[in-house]
Image (cartoon, rainbow, N blue to C red; front, side, top):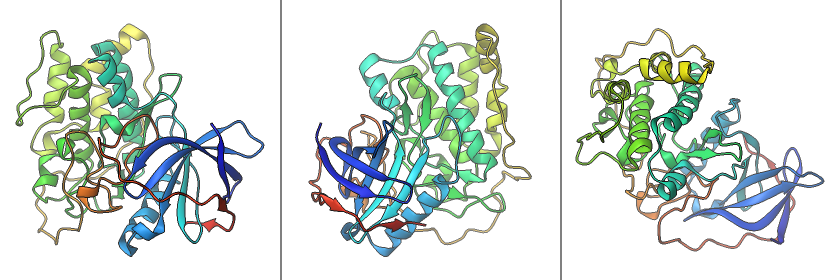
Length: 339
């Protein structure tokens, strides 16, 4: 692994190596390290030439949200800055790859293992909701693993701040994980993420996604787990449980007693009315499609058909065909904070 170039950020000067962690149509994610330090990072580098003004606004929104988050199960943002040609995001490096790749290689998880991961995922989402943030793209390829087998929720491309209990209609995220209200251009609230969590739990246990909207549960899954998945995948948002409900469910409690674990919780959004009775508003622009390969057909960095950057911090691929990216110059010295 050879040094490719150095870039001066707002907090340190970083060595960027030629080890590719992920690729997309408009950028690349490379392994990075701070000068005079052993700490490694994932450097998300995006060419400005490929971005519209709207793309840059979306990117700044992503940075603004993620830079304010601090949770043991959420990928942390270390630095964000830009120069005349590129945007840089220095993120926590998770060397265990993504959960999607791990399950593809090893097969579906046993319930006890799924429980271990699921609790961490729910705690991360509960933290987001307590901060009035919706993730809106929770899926296995956005769940990364550390060398200690700890889950980290990544990729805040589609995240948004919630106000007055709802956000306006917008088709976003990945199709296989989208709840009905997103597909139908309905108003969105925190229960959007709960549906995605239900798909994630199903996929962890089956190494497959529901077919044609039918949820066939394999033999051996406990009744408590079946009921929990059914509750999360309710079509009516007000029938879905909150993150607090999930962490106090009979399925979680069963494994909690067996493992002697203590679950930390935080308060979710308060005062939310779940029934979607508000007048319809103009749908926001967004890319509507997801891919069966879990690629990034919902990223605001470009059109759905070009599969731009998406959760590139682990060992996940971005589809079988990679669009060549412009080589990054070996000299990057004049940068400033992106905020």
